[in-house]
Image 1 (cartoon, rainbow, N blue to C red):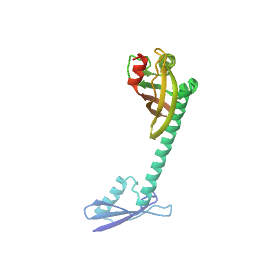
Image 2 (tube, helix red, strand yellow):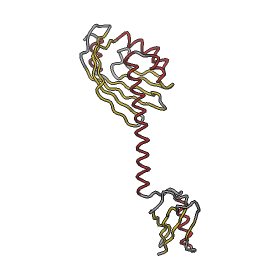
Image 3 (tube, rainbow, N blue to C red):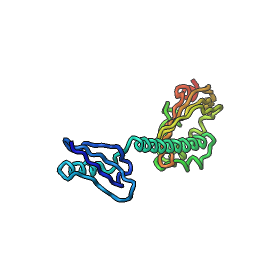
Image 4 (cartoon, rainbow, N blue to C red):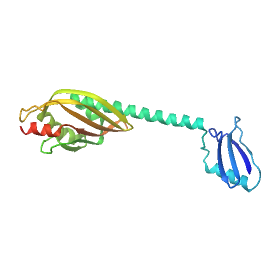
Length: 215
């Protein structure tokens, strides 16, 4: 068996990695502390195969320690992205709950979609696309049709660009004067580039529908 050592300062993270370059040849890729680039090769066809394998690796083979560091760095980046998603989604939820339309609009992406699940006979149930449609159609219908009596936000969790909030609320329906009683709600919020792209709302749609129709 032929063994070769390739020492490149272009392989800063490759210590201890071995790759089989050709039958009977093992290539050990080892970083060098000096800025120079050196190679120790046995000059035969197997050596050429070993060098070709190293080039094919794209100088990206990682030692176990450096692989762990790279993975940890990736996890940190993901955690940072998730934290940013949650912060934006919370700001949006707070603005929606307090009636801060200026902040709400400022956080919406240009292709934002607001979707409420439930009985489509209720004026504020359905989908609205874009800030203008949300503020021009959904908001007036919702504001004039329902008054929240109680509200809690009890849970939140996030992964990458998706955040979820869960809580309870109760409301009075303007048309009928009926009260919903306390029910659970949840909303899934998608955030892209610091803007809210979608808001998908879930509630006791059956209870809200009954109260709206006075049943």
